[in-house]
Length: 174
Image (cartoon, rainbow, N blue to C red; front, side):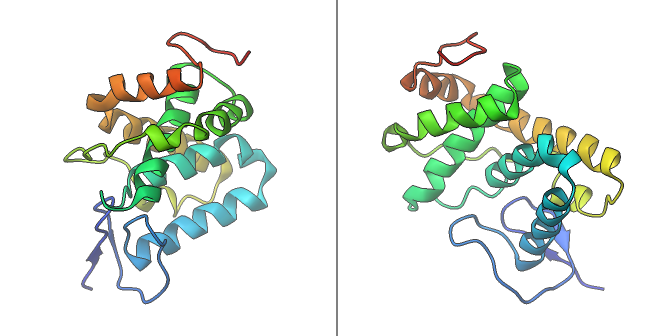
């Protein structure tokens, strides 16, 4: 069977005719796989703690293009929330509150050139995992791989966090 490569994350999926996101560049098969991940997370309250990691990992692995203001702002906000959760240890709720606070400054964001590889784990490895513990572990690894891929932009992400008065090392919101 021929597979179709996603123009965002690079994962391969069976050909699929369907919708895609308006500014996150993906194949229809990849977008459908992400939909399956979201459906699983929404149907199992035990997966709520990893839900935002899934959203963030998918968003930064499907950055869209430079001419799309929503795309570049999305990447910035999702990279910030991944940083707050994975690097600073904020809970999903606190990281989300910080992301909402930071969104007030998203007009200051600029395009970050995507890295050559957007991570070694994609939604393709997560979507088939039906057992909750395996799903959660895979999402955590996916989020880490996605954030690690963007490491060359770490100074910019840290600077953007200071726009919302979230300095390096701050693990709580005032």
